[in-house]
Image (cartoon, rainbow, N blue to C red; front, top):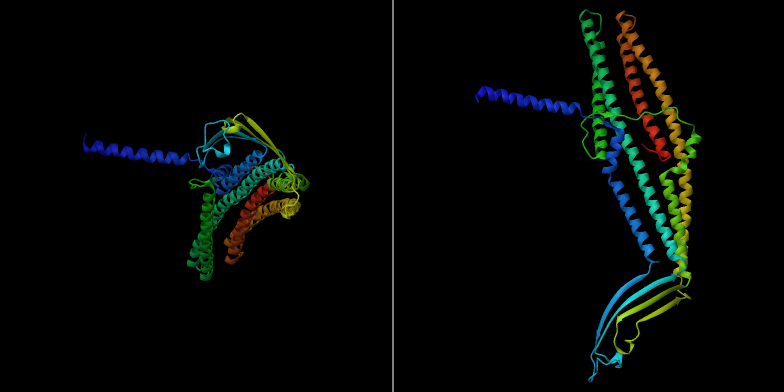
Length: 429
């Protein structure tokens, strides 16, 4: 194979690589809000820590259940002692107390019968704790969703701010060119050109700020999803802006996860009071033994059972203190639940009003953008007919830029407010 063939083959290889790279880039799907949220759930350490607390609550349930379960063990003992004289260690009638070696093997049984409902209250409390952790995990997911929404729309807003400023930058450059040409023929003053240059530089400063804001917003979103964003973003959620009235959302306030978690926390505190009160009640249990090896005068006894009834008479003030502490925690949990209910209603009312207001703002600014655009075009046309001066044109262009940026801000504020309203009643994607 000659050099020409090698060179042609190398060119084909390079062309193929560039083709496949371009093809892979072209087929790269944009990152959507739903996908970003799914990725953030997998990446979030906060969610993982909440799941760990659920595992701990499950462990507490097993511990509480264990208190009502029978306990069975197989016990092997071998006692050796110094014996004075010549004790017969093999005689069945020899005293166990004087044997040099006393082996014993037995099954031991223990079954609690009653302890003031402590066990059942503890089982119910652990069940409430587990449910509380589940709802806390759901609430953490909802709050994470809001964080992702803010970061996601933050990137989109910054991108569109950059596009708006770029378009204004182009309009300013055209103004400078026109003023320069008009200045050459004495139809424009030098000060008008300098004013346009100053506005251009201010625009460039604003443009750099918007680019920086986009980078920061993108980095924040990458922090949540746990990977670098290669392509563009796409908002894949369509919704009706004309939402239901406030009563509809207030009626659904009880579905919020943190409210349900607080309800379970109150149940947990109530059951802990019962657990503390159990210290005032007697306890009853049965212990038994079944012997598989025994020596001495008890070798013929295969089993025994012991019934124990423990009646508390005086235990200082420890039990009373535990009851008072548990009762105080119960009252605290009840007050927290009441406050959270009121806070939930306030969150819904605030989110509803902000969403409605931001929607109305967006509609008004859409009309303002149309009007300011027409005003700029009319001033530009009048300027060509010497009906207005350059300051009027520049002022109209500045207003057009400002109102477009305000519209962009209002649009994404409306989107964020919508999702805050949904999360206020415990809903996400």
